[in-house]
Length: 364
Image (cartoon, rainbow, N blue to C red; front, side):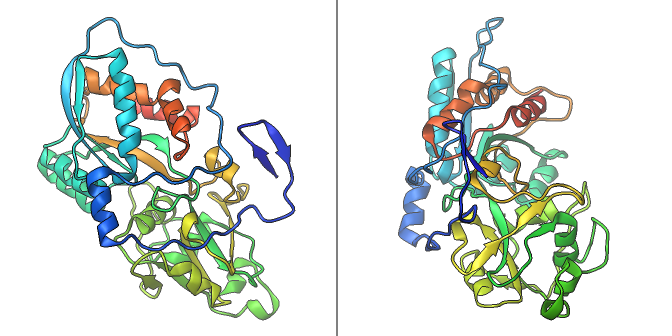
C-alpha cells in the first residue's frame, strides 16, 4: 500500500514498491571538479512529495538579545544550494549574523578543516569518517557534535539515497532482520547469534537450504559501507567488523549487476544504484519487529530503517554551549520554517518532528 503524502490519497499498486531505474554512471573528473567549485546540479524531483510533519514547531526568533557574529562553514557539494537558502532565510530574521560558505565544496575537506579548528560548522551528507573523528578527538580531546538536520533522499544519485539489501530475482527470500544481517556480514556479531553462511539459515528450504550465500559489499572506507557498519553491525560503542570473505567492490556501481547474475548472491546499495534482475528485501531493525519495505512513503516517513540523514557538524565542548547565533541558526533549520525549505527544494526529505526534537536536544 502506498499513500500519496502530498495529496492524502491512498491506493494500491499492482506492481512492486520499487521500480528500478538504469544504474547511473560515475561522475567524470570534469564533473567532480565543477561540483567542488559550484555545488552539484540538482536532480529532477520525485513525482511523490511528502508533507511537513504538523508537529514541527514554527520558528520564533529570539528577541531577548540581538544576535550577531561571523561564521565560516563548509558544505558537501549536494548541500550547497540548500545551505545557502537556509542562510538567506535566517538572515531575514537576524541580519547581523553573517556566514561564509566558500568552495571547494566537499564534506571530506570540510571535516578535515573542522578537526583543525578552521571552521565553525560543516554540512555533510553522510556520517563523518572514523579518521575524521579520531583527528578531531586528538586535537580537542572530545568528539565533534553531529546533528541531523534533514533526511536524505529516496533514490537520487549522489544525493544520499536510502540504502537497500537485495537478492537475485529468483530468490524467494522476502525479508531479513538486522540481527541476521549482522550474523551474515560481520565477524564481531554484536547482535548475537552464530555466523550465517547458508540460505537455509535464513529460512529457505528445498534446493536453497544448503546453498552458500555469496555476499557483495563496498570496500571500506566508503560512505555506504560505513552507514551499514554503523546502523547494522555496530551496537552502542562496539564497532562492527566485516567478514573478510565478502566480495568487496571498489565502488557501489557494480553490486546490483553482480547480484543479478548470481542466484546465490545478496548485496546492498543506495536505491539509486539498484537495477533490474534483483529484488529488494523488507528490513526489520529488531527481531519480532515489523519488516518495512524500501518504498517512497516508508523512507519519507523515516519508518524504513536504512533511511539516511544529513548532518551539521560543529565543535561543541562537553558541557559548554554553542555560540548563541550558531545555535539559533541550527534551531531555525530544525523548525517548521527550516524544514519547509527542504520541502520546497523537493530533493531531500524533511525530518519528522521526533527526529527534529532529538536534534534540538543536541544543540543545548
